[in-house]
Image 1 (cartoon, one colour):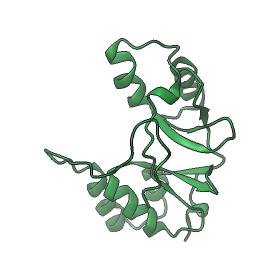
Image 2 (cartoon, one colour; image 1 turned 135 degrees about the vertical axis):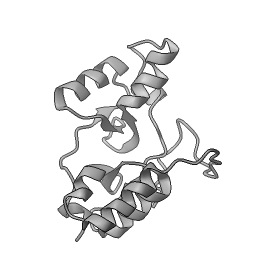
Image 3 (cartoon, helix red, strand yellow; image 1 turned 120 degrees about the horizontal axis):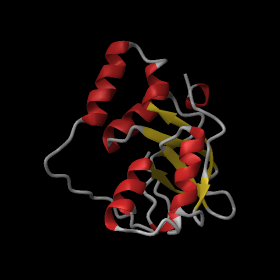
Length: 156
């Protein structure tokens, strides 16, 4: 089975120039906690979560008019639509993320979440993935050379 078979498509996205407030409103209207962020050409340039809005804007007294591109996560876990499920499983477990963007030639075409994978993986396999994703380390050293505001890093 491939990611195109399980992804939610088309993805609800926001632009890097959209404000935090607009992004939060879109999340509320579409009942989503994760949005791929696209540039003016529609290419994937990041992702924003409801937690990003809470911790990077609200908790630090940030402005609701702050552009999403200034606080979005730029190290996005992304895969291709023809990738098999195990590729997504490995990426999510390694990066400890619960969602990934499915992209084609840099354009987001879908999102795969743990909930999507729960529908198609057998229970022991999904349980193993869930434990890997939710496991926390007391110290974590990020060896990635990616920087905030830089290019999207495909981690797969």
